[in-house]
Image 1 (cartoon, one colour):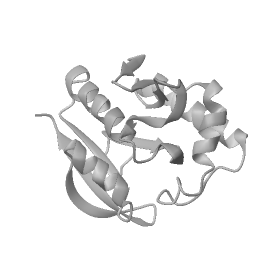
Image 2 (tube, helix red, strand yellow):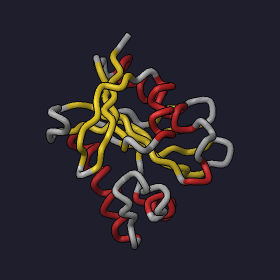
Image 3 (cartoon, rainbow, N blue to C red):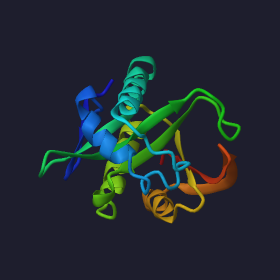
Amino acid sequence: MISTIETERLILREILPADKTEMFVLDSDPEVHKYLGNMPVKDIDQVREVIQFIRQQYIHNEIGRFAIIEKSSNEFIGWCGLKLFKETVNNHTDFYDLGYRLIKKHWEKGYATEASKAWLNHAFETMNLNEVYAMTDTRNLNSKKVLEKLGFSFVEKFDFMGDESDWFKITKK
């Protein structure tokens, strides 16, 4: 498994148990969870479980979401990465999903796009994948803008856990 990915402004690395405080800031914010079913975490123990779940994906799938570290400040600002979905979502099974989530004060700075570009490069060049999917709540216009900027194409609307979501796909060029 890859250990880090670097971009001009960011270091992408495994999420560690030591990231629990910053992950709590991220996942306890109702605005961050607005389009995620709006179920922010309530305590640090929930964050520890999330981190453990992500770390298990590294072991079982050799891939997962990575911490986004801003180079200039060495600050944890969110996460981004690929997740292997083994369960069926929108009639797809065993597919790679690109996802990202940022602490609110780091929104609209291009970090999600920058980190995602690096992950797509890794997906297509290193992992030799032919396609990557992404999904977002239909109302999440900012996330849709990021996906479109990255070159994802809208495929269809579908029901994801009770919410209308948009299904996107990008293929290797």
